[in-house]
Each structure stands twice: as C-alpha cells, then as structure tokens.
Image (cartoon, rainbow, N blue to C red):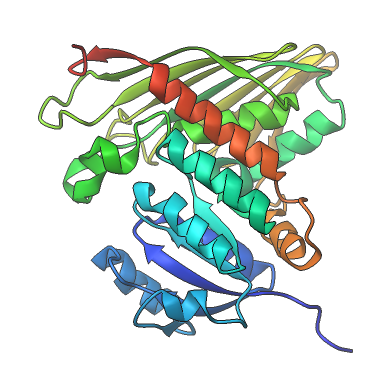
Length: 344
C-alpha cells in the first residue's frame, strides 16, 4: 500500500526557540524536513537545531530553498521584523509559509502580505503555539464547540513571561525589530479570543504598554494589556515580562472562558495549587466542577496544515482569522497609552 502523501519543507531563520515546536508539529504529522538555511541564525539555536535535526541539508543561501521545486512549505522563526518580508518572498516563489508569532511588526507589512496572499493563493500561517501546541487549549476548543458552556461571552487571557535579559539577543530590546509587546506575545491571546468567540470582526476598545521596571532597556515594553469587543463578546488580555524566578516554568499562562452556561479555566503550564505537570483544564457547569488532565489530547495543527498545503483548504486556521488576529494586535500596539518609563 503506498504511503500517504505528505509535504517536504525547508527552514529559513533560526532566531527563536519556537522553531523547534514548529518543526516538531510537522514531523509528528509525517512531513519531511529537507533543508535549512542558518544564515543570520542565533548561534546557540543553530547548534541545537543541527543536533536535533541532522537530516536537514544545510544550504548556503535562502535561494536554494526558495527555488527548490520539491519543497512546498517554508518555516521561519526569524527576527520578528523579518518574518513578514520573508513570508512575502516565500509566497512569491509559489510556496506556503508558516512563521512563529507575531507574524508582523507593522500595519504596512500586514497590508503587503494580505495583497500577496490574495494574489498568489498561498498560505500564510502563524503558529500560535499557546493554542496549537497546548493540549488544554485544544481540549477547551472541543468543549466550547460541543456547547459545554453555552455561548462564549468573554475571554480573559494572561500571558506572563520570564525576561531572562542576559540571555536575550540584542534585537529583543529594539522596538523596531520586535514590534512591541502587544504585537508580539499578546498575539496568542488575541488569536484565542477570536477562536473561542467565533468572531470574524472585532475592535480594540483600549490598550496600554509600559516599561515599569527596566529603565536600562528604554525600548523594552515589560507590560501591556488590551480590551477587545465584538457584537456579542468582550475580551481582556494582559501580557508581561514579570514571571518570578521561583516559578518552575517560564510563565503561568492562563485562559478564562466565560459562557452563558458555564466557565472554563486553563492552567496551561503549571498548576500552582500543586497538581503535577501542565495542561490542566477546569470546567464548571450546572452539574458541578470538573478537572480534566489534557496531557493525552492530540494536537491537530500540524496534520491539518499538511492537508491544507496538499488540498488547498483552510482547516488549520482560516486565512482571514490569521490576518484579523494580526491586525488587532497591531491596532492595539499603535493606539496604546504609554506608561512608566515609556511615558512622554
């Protein structure tokens, strides 16, 4: 019996640890990693990539990947300001593209990518890892779609991160390169707001950014929040770089989903009340309170994206959703009130 068709992909831009999750989700679904361009990559990540994926042929320049007709898909975890221009280049070469979040650092980049995507019909996908690579979030999506908590009327997403400033590359502290805290890490929570509410349009009601505690890095935004609204739901998002060193994980990421008939809380990476491991889901409905360990929930994104590449469908993430989530992040970033050491 012949093997099921899959895709061959290349990697350009190894500048963020997210690349390992991106590659892993495709390999787990049967795709083939064929080539990698390490030009401009972060040295420690390049070393780890080489040892983790020795099967990837190293090329001397990105053109070898872009012009390779045997490759259908290109992955990137480049410096944030370079992700969108690379995606445009990939699509113009007739290939589909998956980048890590945030997918854009300016509204101009988004407008160009939208135009090229419409022109070429290629896929521009952002791997929102806090949804696609988190089993509790996948399970919450299944429960919401099954009507477990009724109609979703509000989401509250919290995205704390540990700064680890001495280990960060120089671009991390340059606003033009990383795009701002709302354009970057808040993209996860904006994506989840749209997904769980089912909204195909929304607006930013208010947003703030701040540098409250790191004046030595004047372009760093160490705090940000957003209020979102649709006709039938609201959302609140808070992201920051204040995870304390005593916490065993990089951040106590949480999502609260309010429905007309119940609530869901996700403790994605740690349960500080003492349950071991990650992927904890708490469901409260009219029958009681339930704890669900989601450690065995399958992650569908990689397999869905492969089918989308082969079938020209949009099962992993609708293209309109990808662009709307990005637009809301950039709108929030542009209109944000500036506080702390950013004020004035």
